[in-house]
Image (cartoon, rainbow, N blue to C red; front, side, top):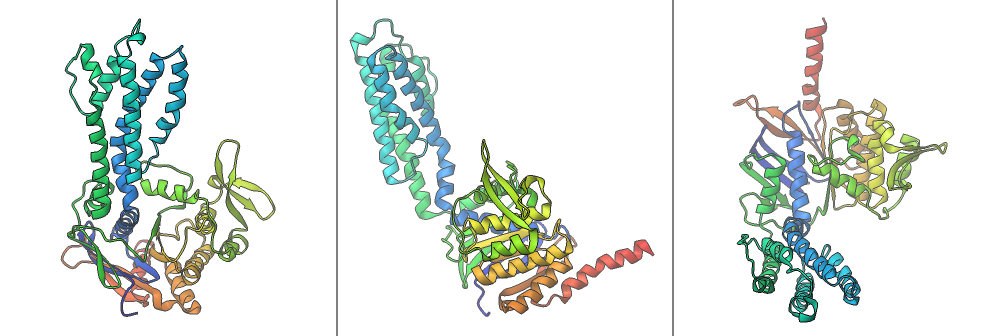
Length: 444
């Protein structure tokens, strides 16, 4: 294929001196440890995660600002209830504001969402003003200093020890409304302009403050859609969903350090229907001898493995190889694997018996052929490399298969250049022969 569907160019980052990689169907990168394979995988994952979920990530970045205001308004509503407790109005407050407080947690960052926020603020401000100014309710009721203090803190104002009742009457509701409007305005601006800074911020967080690569570009059909020196991120068309698996042990495990573990587990629990059951049936009957699914337990949903003889096990307690195939089956069953999916797998052969390495390679080829799933595979296993090539030839998909080998730079032994091998795997096997040389050196 002359024009690659997706092309990724990276230079000058960590162990990567240069990499110019095409992704048409199945792309395999090979090389010794610490040559940058995992770095490439993470760059791809977080780039597509940012570009395809841009609005969601903008919303997440601004939610804490809205949360501070919402928490302050919660205190106001609580104060209104306490102030009216024992009276009929107390029940009215609870009835009127319960849904309002609940909805403020989930209102989207849209024009309609902004209007709902402003309506809620106006409603609370009106009730607060009525409480403060109603002379008949003042007997034995304290001045609501806590309410005033918290609202002013939400605005970022300093505590200037206001003591008079007039100060507590003059809550700056207009400033609160202006602050909410400014947060929504910021969100709308980012969603429309899609500045690359959101990806750069994610990049620095994931790679712990590392400098940006000298070059990082992504092309769709020869058109550059992403570049760290470009002001904005274009919307990808060929990829709408990216998944990163670096170990089957991540299933069912939450880890704040590896957020892609949490991303995967959230995706595995997604409800949905797959396109067909043929590939899942191959996993169940030809490979693992059972079915992987999510089943309801007494307290929560549970990943489970049901063996062909009917025995049911917690998936977290079964062999790692079953987990590896189980991840694929769960993604298949809930419809997460489509022709717009990029599935990134780091060393899929890890923890697999040689026979299952071949089965896993076969599954990758069939997922690409039948569903159009695109793969970026990092491997240094000869069985996996061979199986991907020869099964692709048999299935007639070799044209969309490409291999890359990380070669040590002549100028710096700590840096690597990625060489495009096409479908020629001989250079990869030559690199594997280093292991035989070490056996001869240490064992004879």
